[in-house]
Amino acid sequence: MSAVTDTFVRTLHTADLTPGLRGAIRRLLDGAFAGHADGDFTDADWDHTLGGLHTLVLEGDEPIGHSAVVQRRLLHGGRALRAGYVEAVAVRADRRRRGHGATVMAAAERIIRGSYDLGALGSSDEATGFYAARGWQVWAGRTSALTPGGILPTPDVDGWIHVLPVAAIDLGGELTCDWRDGDVW
Ligand SMILES: CC(C)(COP(=O)(O)OP(=O)(O)OC[C@H]1O[C@@H](n2cnc3c(N)ncnc32)[C@H](O)[C@@H]1OP(=O)(O)O)[C@@H](O)C(=O)NCCC(=O)NCCS
Image (cartoon, rainbow, N blue to C red; front, side, top):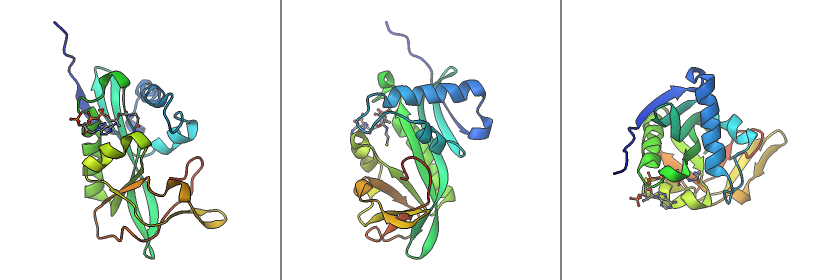
């Protein structure tokens, strides 16, 4: 007979994470992305994860699933759209395919639909099917970034940026993200 561990779901702002929980989330993300085709989880990735709302699947005090929604500005069609940008979606390797990824994404999508003009994220190779099954759409147009040196194209991510439209949007147009250290998208 195998023991069934109860899980529960919490959505918390970064400011409300205890130091212990914050450290446990970072360890979850380091482990979930270790050896990942897109590279390990970096300090810059962690920086991008902070400052918004985290949704956690917890087994006791231990997070086994995580998503974050942070606000960014995405320029599109002459407007600076308020975007809920999804970061650090991960489930511990030994807890995958049990619906925890869907749980943390459903919470992120509720936040996006209730607060933002659109949702956006940069998908890893292995997760495109996961996002597509949830209704996220690949950005079909060009992407670029508003860098300190002006707007520069980001062709490396074309085909990997997924959006969840809330307001009407032209998926074939140009989408420009605001600037940050590390991966800009
Ligand atoms: C992507 C990830 C978060 C999915 O978590 P999960 O808990 O396994 O996902 P779920 O069990 O909720 O899956 C729900 C559905 O999504 C789809 N899905 C999940 N993982 C998938 C994958 N790797 N490829 C294609 N479809 C996938 C399936 O339809 C699945 O339903 P099913 O199991 O009934 O077939 C997890 O595999 C992970 O942490 N990967 C490593 C980190 C990563 O790449 N994160 C994404 C960064 S952009």
